[in-house]
Length: 216
Image (cartoon, rainbow, N blue to C red; front, side, top):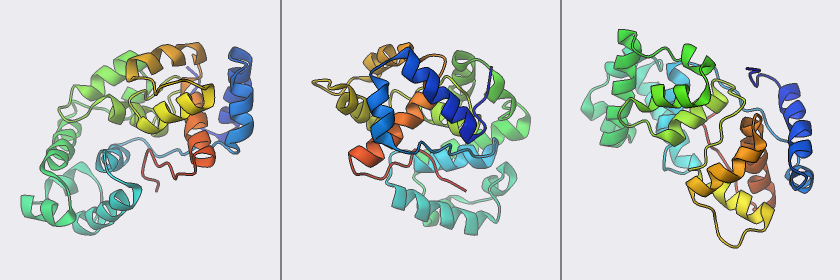
């Protein structure tokens, strides 16, 4: 499995995608530069994605800054040291606090290896991550894409991707996650690059900032 680690990997994927699906020629042209957006695998990367679930980029960034200040470092040990009161002051919901703690405990116990999971095939990797309560498919997919560099993951539950694919391919209605999974099958084994492509298309053509994951 060839991981997506560099801009050259993204570029190679785009070439293959255009050959796999001629409709993507115009999408690639309109999207402009397709960013790599790689983060280091590990607890810090997963925590950033959990924080960014279901909130705006600005809100996620503000919560992340407060979390870094309160914890000192984003490690399982430091996060488990935060009290309920600390987490409320940071702006974390109860659900996100619980998910961050469950993930931290799993890593601490050695039940979850956030490096090794990136090298599993997509279904096995997703099953491993979603076994932790509070980590759904979107969170797992985004972690595997941006922290793992997995080449063939497509987060079909992402609203921006649903809107971008509908807009770019001229669909009458926004596809459901299941429908988008079906559409994206055509882009294997480069679904990880196709997701990046459609996020870039969404940001440029639909004039909105898209931030599927915190950076840094």
